[in-house]
Image 1 (cartoon, one colour):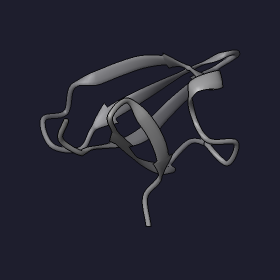
Image 2 (image 1 turned 45 degrees about the horizontal axis):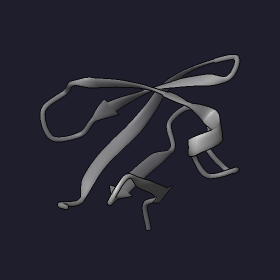
Image 3 (image 1 turned 90 degrees about the vertical axis):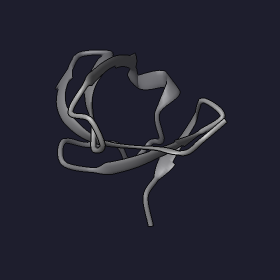
Image 4 (image 1 turned 180 degrees about the vertical axis):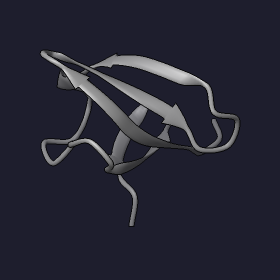
Length: 55
């Protein structure tokens, strides 16, 4: 599976909204699936549905 790059644009309780950096689409996802350091403005990369903070 290919790498996808996102930016966290909103956090509401147990869920975050991510913006796809390539096409501008949005993804609504549970915070439990994201790294502990996730916060608004953090850039994430997803590989095989596993999220990590982008280097």
